[in-house]
Length: 418
Ligand code: MLC
Image 1 (cartoon, helix red, strand yellow):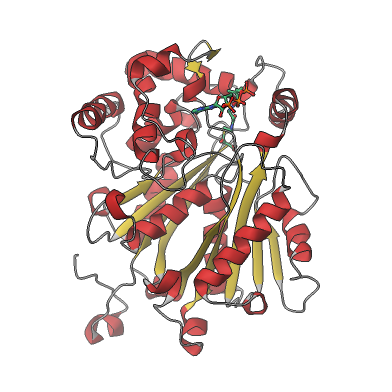
Image 2 (spheres, protein in one colour; image 1 turned 90 degrees about the vertical axis):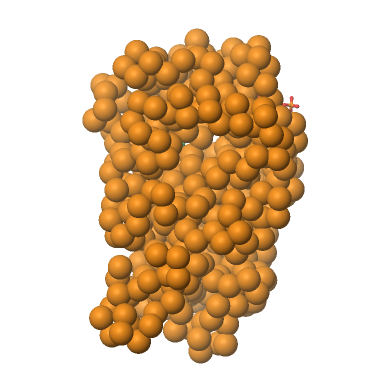
């Protein structure tokens, strides 16, 4: 494990309330989330020397990050780096890895990452006009994105035998998780019957199986350990519960959405996850929390197999088992998406993976209360997906790792649990 992995820390997280038709612009939501992240990190605006933003759909700007940085008073400023990242829903995880790179390679000391949107404030017609146009789609009926995922669902069912009921259990799992999270939009646990009876959106998907469009924003601050040490803040981030280390990351690309050919070659989460596992030198069974993209059940199914929660082709069976467990025990904590994911926490367009990162930080800091996945949550993996499987970004986060003198000299790290 490279020693460099210790140098970049997640030190602050902020989020607005999520809601329907909040009547605020995406920029104003992102600005509030940035302020929240700064106060959680005990830093000032002036401490930042980098900003990364993920573009919004409801209030788009050329160069979103420049717009946001100017709006909150960070630009114009000398020696300030600004980047807009567009890898669709993978954006917040790509941004996390880009923030790490800006610290390691561009000498930044503290970079804020912001993502947010106000898509529930758009009418259904306007939302679908923009969403359909966004994937330049003349081959799919509206709603184009759910229909695109629907075709992949068909392919997967034919190829691997996942059933309609197994897929419908995914929102049940996510609503079970969300019902216990203080900030999730979904407050009630769904049954599989309820999901199957909700309005049909495409031949393969019903309403409760679609990412729940929402207004809201999140922000994360990453900082160099040298800067934190200088400021007396090392290991004191995130409300005093300790920093979180970005251990590793991996990214991979699939075809432009919608894909012309649907087969195994179009998926990229496997490659992104493998790169992240390789860099961190950890195995899937050494991850205690997974924050996985679940815009539609098929995305969740692909993800659990890609990150190694269950073997390839066994995702449907794993979902059945988990469903049985939540039926048997209302307090069961599934170590995946303890916030409820896109399906049940809420999904402000390309921003929702930022909530998976924030949840990972909460778990690693041991402050998830009844939803804590393990008393000592050692590592967390987060995955973001862009477009219709067009982009994958995976990051592995951990608590800071202890070095003994010999290991430090050899550049090798160990955690007490390894
Ligand atoms: C919607 N509702 C839900 C829900 N989804 N309730 C529970 N769980 C869910 N998953 C509720 C809403 O809150 C609302 O309640 C009511 O159902 C109607 O929802 P709506 O969204 O206002 O309906 P409508 O405008 O008719 O649109 C339905 C839809 C749309 C399915 C066409 O929601 C949609 O397109 N969703 C998918 C969004 C999407 O494509 N995201 C990107 C995924 S791809 P109430 O009480 O207010 O009436 C991705 C990758 C990337 O993530 O790169 O972006």
